[in-house]
Length: 192
Image (cartoon, rainbow, N blue to C red; front, side, top):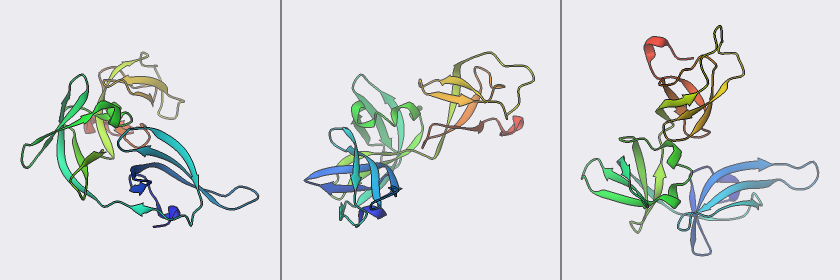
């Protein structure tokens, strides 16, 4: 596969290491050739690097199979997941899920990612998650959705910019790709 075809979440083999694409941008500078700017993570060590590749550069894509699982809890060093069909439990070291950790809520459904050899290499989060506002500034009277927003700390420690009318204790829908506010979780209040 060529580098120009790489998308977020894809995994390829480079110098014997499994590399996951975290972000991929097609960049055309004013002069010169088009390049691919990517944020890549070593699946085993968790190290993240920013790399520039030529669009025509070849990579060996790794086949990944997915297995539905539920996030249970974390201990001092691992996140624990359970296969929803077999009830088998899987442990993933915390340092391997540093960017996903802020979205892990108990009982959230994820996809465990396995290589063809059966090696567990990570998770895919759902596109959105429900989270509760743990801390934010008091509601501003007369605030509208069009305002600039204010920071709100969710129950996992994730900080999200939310509209000024959001209060502590409210349940919100948060996008997992960028950690952005999507709306209120309670449909009776209507999504914004």
